[in-house]
Image 1 (spheres, rainbow, N blue to C red):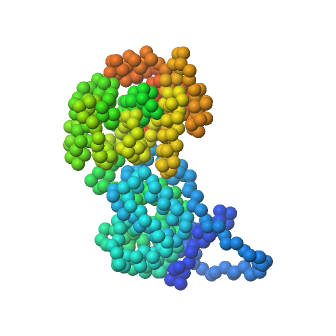
Image 2 (tube, one colour):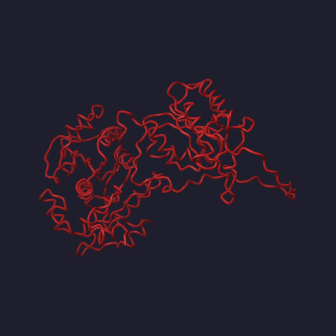
Image 3 (tube, one colour):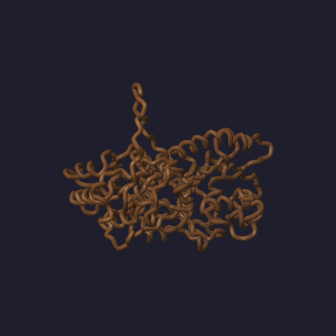
Length: 484
């Protein structure tokens, strides 16, 4: 195929409304012959004499044929399209309208709309593809984003896109869900102002990634990863683990990190790092509309070159009854300034706690091996797993295992009841933890070779997607990470 041809002329206008074979062919059918397109098979490149049609064979008569079942959307595996180290920023408050041609695509868009990163977006879905979109927007204003599924190709597609452009408001973005991997088609669509062209099979996370990229704040395009750490009940060591994980991320894995202590009345981040300050996250949450880079810099306490704290007020002079949106606003501002944010969550269940957990990139649930923790951990695990369908499940840490003379649920029974193997099992080491807490130090500063330190180090490696440098990543740490 000559590269000098105009992309429009490579399409047959008579074939404009044909559905490409990729939509009908099953996985066992032979692939379409390659035509020189960068992405492989191309409907535009099959130029030449048509093949002879196969002879017609009469099908046997069927008595009372039943209609075929409506196809159900089956999402591709998340791991096929996601990167564990990737961070996708939440979208701002936008309106999105999708016009689909197939029920499977409508179901996929519904799952996209349910993603935690789309929480501030308003989605509506209709059938009918491009013609339905053109008809609807003749009489009403267009949203921030239009998603359109179209099996058309050639002049017919471009003519209808021109009709849509004539009724679109300035600033509206358009994403086409097509059917053919064709570089010429993609180039022509982008030349005409289409923001993106996607080809099935699609997982919701791909559409989430696309929408997030289109609406990234040009002034703050960066978004750090947010990990929320919460205890299944009080006293299980979730704050200690959160602080030590953040220290490992910053000092061992060399990734800048900020700890946000959200236990406003009883937070211990200041104590654990031996920093006493009255300023911190409380002042930011009290006036979230004032939060910017300058204010955060003033409120943040720097522990090391790579680790910073937003400490809790830790006083009882005020009842911290704040608007849940205040937490979302402040966390969004913090994540725009640092690659990794660790949220030290209180053991509460309020609307802001629930929303914060649902909005985090990773959730770590810390439990001790007793019945109350098992019940609470399972309730939180099931809710978060079901409500975060496009993310990996929460990570479970069983802490304080092996307390002398205390009856415990075995780790095996704990995992079976939970329905998930723990990410990490940490032994009870009271002398190590007590000395670190009393001295305002991290566990690594007391004993770098303890099992607890190496386990927390492994968790930090999992959360960041980085490997611990040096010889210690083999042996015990390697086993914790699943390496042989």
